[in-house]
Image 1: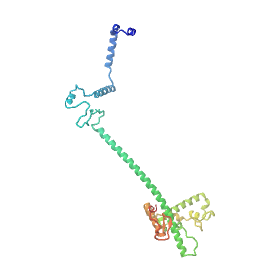
Image 2: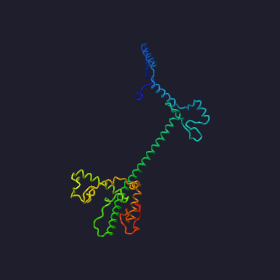
Image 3: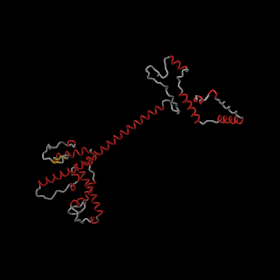
Image 4: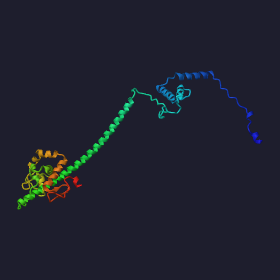
Length: 316
């Protein structure tokens, strides 16, 4: 009973009447009308108008058209269309209408698609060009490395061929004149055109280098300008490099003139591809001296039966 006495008596509760709105005074009414008139008189900027138009357009596009009161929807419903279904019998059509894309530039219809197509073609062409350039670069680097390696092999083969020819010449001279003990002069003393064209370029380059060495020696030693001066510290090789005769000690100016002369035969040989020049050197050493450049060995038999082949690949 005590609990029931403590409960509120809603039937006897006094409900306060809502406060009546204060009546608008004349001053407030005038101020309100002024504000409304100012808002109406305010001209919106282009950006504000565009924003309002965009908001209204988005709101209209977002409004669904499947309202049951819509006359078009009623007609489609009679044809069997239900809300949420796709158009078409295969159930693979669109469930929503195509979104409207507003065109904001002056380009014609399909211009953007054509620009995108051309841009994709340009990017594909650029990617292919870069890939082709990378392949060409790798091929060029590989070719340059092989060419540099082959030029070094040619120089080594020229030195070996020159030594073999010089040794064969000394052996033949010894057999013809066994009493002669004086060594045969080197190819550097021979007329340049009488040297085999296979290593004539090597001898010619050696003469040019020796001439430069002689010029440096002349600049560092004033006494060397005297034609009768002989330096006791210079050996036979130094005298030859300086252009002096061992006995007379005079400069051999004819060597310089010979180096400067044109040599069409040597030019034609140097114009050949490096593969052909190296091949000619290898064949010469095999045929004339039974020497294999790749085996680094001089065979005793003409057939060179123990040699695997004539090319470098045969020796791998």
